[in-house]
Image (tube, rainbow, N blue to C red; front, side, top):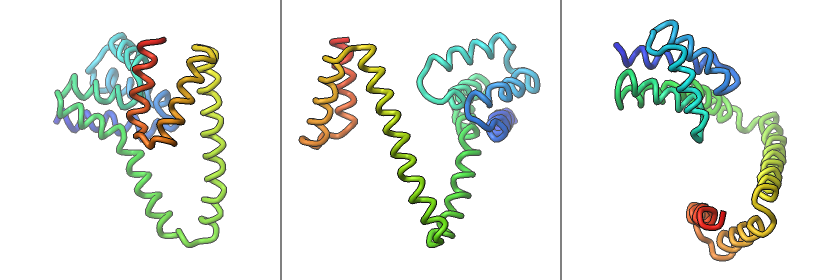
Length: 175
């Protein structure tokens, strides 16, 4: 029965929490503090603080931790699945609609509009990363990482995973 409660607590808060992780936190708090009484408000706030300090989406970290505390490793997997299940269900449903109408002129027009929009968003994100890198570590390190990354990715064809690992090692040594 505890696994069902773990699933319901995470699924409910994530399906109703429109807007991502920050929107799900109060809903999840209501479920685990008020409804099930698994944590106190103070324990939950410490959990959120710790979760914000770790990389990745907050809702999945909270779900995995809550599941682990209440149901062990299996509870952690159930909580994690329940936190991504609403998005997974919607993606499958929307993909089915998209495939059904893939030859529609409206869908083709939509994809022609979305591609440049995504390109612009990625360009803005790249500029922000570059500017942050420049202001935090300076031109020299930023330039070395950009030139080495370009050379290794484009000229040598090395896997991006190894390039990122190399950048991490460079940062650990020189920064």
